[in-house]
Length: 253
Length: 318
Ligand SMILES: Nc1ncnc2c1ncn2[C@@H]1O[C@H](COP(=O)(O)OP(=O)(O)O)[C@@H](O)[C@H]1O
Ligand SMILES: [Mg+2]
Image (cartoon, rainbow over all chains, first blue to last red; front, side):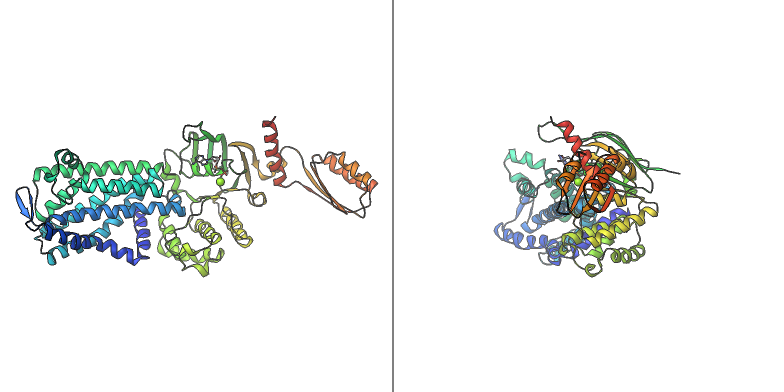
């Protein structure tokens, strides 16, 4: 465990050198919610019908913002590998007395710690600025789900970063992947409003699963059976991502 | 009693490029390193030195063969191996966003040192490698040589039983080379085992107890430094000074078939293979010329090295 802490300690030292980065990391979900969400809230004045109930767009979008920020955190963290490769420290890390798994775990736990602050800021703003009726008793569970989300996406993207190796190629890969995952999911609109063939793809998208679980926790929308299935799906996704990330890291030199 | 720190047996490493025949970077090499030894892995560029270091430090897996480090197998017990080593890779490796001091702090933490231990040791290595003025600078602001110093200094900061140094002194000035050499010797005295690669043969000659020379992935010589120097042919280096050099003397010396011979207006330097040839050269100089001064030394490791590598080339080329 000392090595996991050492990885986190090092990430904290680095993050501390750029306060602007730190600030935006914390504030981006909030900004999304305020700018994007509020705009759409006005445009979709009569609200959104989902699972038979009507909610306003802000309420609907809150879960999307949270899951989006998980994906963003994972992008941030996985990008670091390219810089570390360039300076060569990446290779030295791999000779330190820790397992590949510990290294990756430390990376994720640091980002998870940051996310607690992120979630608290976002939820506070949602409640007091946008007056979204939150289920406060669910906040601890929401934090847990956010962490699991970060881990799942981080390991998936880290696998990509280890395999692709080239910064510019990874960039393109990310842009395409993010675009497809985001728009064929329940992040911006209910899946029911998609054409049938897209709907099937959306149901197979881990981003949908994660967003749906967060939506259930924040505003109580969704059927418990479906949510359970989606939790299971995401946990499997996380396990697979971790497995492949460790495997790819072993071959990353 | 000698204990084996590292054992390499029939190690092969092939790199598989895109649809080409695989490149054999290491071709069935075997050697042992004893505890407390300073072991030099020598060879020209592309010989396979870094590849060997990467396998020994668990960065890449071998294609075949067995490697153990402090009794632990690099393939089946990589974590155990890593607990016993610290490494300076050939590529520069500093954590560029944080300060030099923080580089030491993180390195120490990864190697299980407490904050107290770290603070105490930082003082020592910072002095040794002249890093005091830059201690609070961001590592990315350092010059290339400084970065190398930081990277090497970290190794002498922890106390793992085995140290790997891949071209550690490359890019350093004389002063820091000295510091590195001194540090290496001190650590070996304490019983740490040191494996280093270098293309600076003088450095190897000064430091190493044992040497293995690689060329095209194969071992072409190995043994104690003395044994390797004695290897192959006996080579002597002569420096002869005259008042005047006659054509006759020049001709006579050429008949000894020197490996190398240079003539300036009052001195001849030559390298010959047999000690009888060296003696003959001396007596010829006295009978045919006005010898005023002379110097004979045995060949440097560099001469042996060049000869071994040239010999290898000669036997391959038609
Ligand atoms: N990752 C790699 N992929 C393919 N070939 C490689 C790789 N690394 C090294 N090589 C090749 O293996 C040979 C040995 O390289 P290396 O071990 O770096 O030699 P040295 O350190 O002695 O200069 C060289 O021909 C080099 O081009
Ligand atoms: Mg090399």
